[in-house]
Length: 329
Image 1 (cartoon, rainbow, N blue to C red):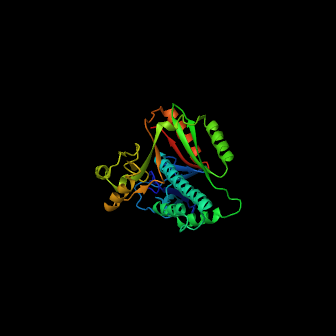
Image 2: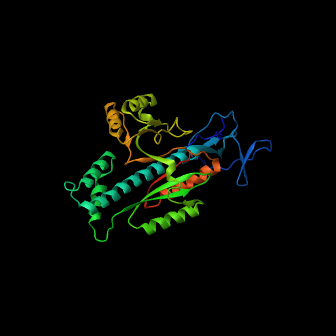
Image 3: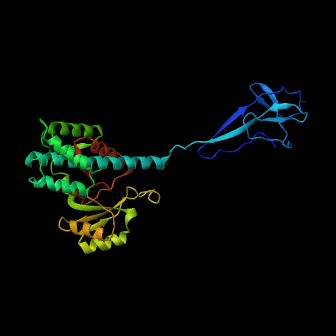
């Protein structure tokens, strides 16, 4: 059996080779098969040899009784790196989920500051603050975020937050609505204009884009937590307007963590839907007040789609921006 083995290592496996030099080899005939290593000729062991080893620095006897060096392959398992297209998409999705959660926390915090500025830090006497605290609990916003912003609102020099809406033209006729909550309007609008220009978009006049959207209350239900038929039945009983399927996803069979059905509701029927979902034991994520849904979604080519996605992401990452809506399919 030869001490030289050849195989394709599996994923996560690394092969290490080591040579051991011992007693010099005797001369060999020119017809002997040989292995050249660092300019020296080393005779190969015949495949008929009955000696083999998997140890480092192993030695095998040759036919004339002398020892000659050979090498063995030692396999050490290491953790494979996450590489490839799917892992990149998963990382991107996770980043988007973290950003969305961070924006929610930021928005609630700003609303708390504004409520405290108007009515004081005591929720017993400040109805608006009491409502926000209950809303934060419903949205699973950590308690310390609410408490920190109540304290922040009483600090000297802290301004109340002002809500603004900006409209943007993207690529291929796609429109964007950017919601901002800021204590410095000039800073916010400058940052948005600069980002839109850098990404190749264009600022739109007030009212030229927002009419493409309708305001609705939304209940988000993970695809993995319920069947669509079940949701449709609940929605119909509760008077919901629609159940929107999650966007197409080529990895849907493997990863459902960021895919949601959206139950569209009027403000009056919203609490009824939440109650029915609780009764059925279905987990859900409520909205943070409302969402804007496109009335007539716009379909664009692949190039425009990618450019619009970049613009969307860059706008959403701005500190003062709370939400970005687009009518792109």
